[in-house]
Image 1: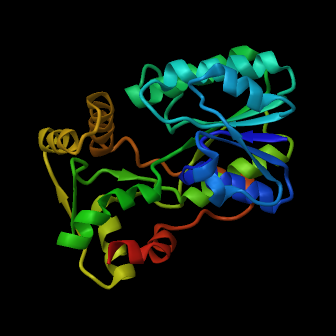
Image 2 (image 1 turned 45 degrees about the vertical axis):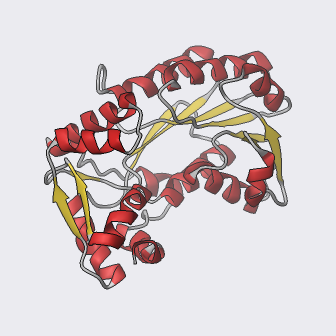
Length: 284
């Protein structure tokens, strides 16, 4: 039995789908089973719970021999280590596959990486065999700009000409599913990227080609971007974290491209052109 957390999100739901399709028994941890019917199906059972409530995690871990750990939120560095402790206490978990972030190993690093590295250290200390997946930026994050692209044909950000090896969410899930169902990945860390590093302007051109409409990226000062995030209701701690990340992107430190997706899956990762064609309707 594989317990999948974050099971209704972009990555988690795809992990559930791919594992179930492969005939694996999956237990999906969800806050609201009623709202999670879309991921239910053959080989999938829903467990009501919340990673911030250890007693529900303990119940969901009963009988599970593998754990896919994914959590989002500012309290990640305190919540996830407690989940690891529950996995250790359960005594049945033989492998933890953790969705971390690219660059988490670079200490002290940035806030986003430090939070994930705290969890990685907790997993290492637990003695449970593990695999760390450290993906680059998700291609699907572009959907956050769908409103302005629809209305103005533009999207904004403080990234300059900085590039990133954006990765298709389905590739992250495919790697997770492979690692959870095959041996030889224990004790390893995989840095997951697409096959090319792209700037936001280059992504705009590819979106233009996929949608048949002109899409433009507009670089803005960090102060203006932060103000916009806060006005949208984003928590300041999270907004500050994103601005710090943007500075790293703009400085050219995120153009990393690795072969780890191909190493695990035996095929090349999907391209941003693939993702843009699949999601073109969202921007029209």
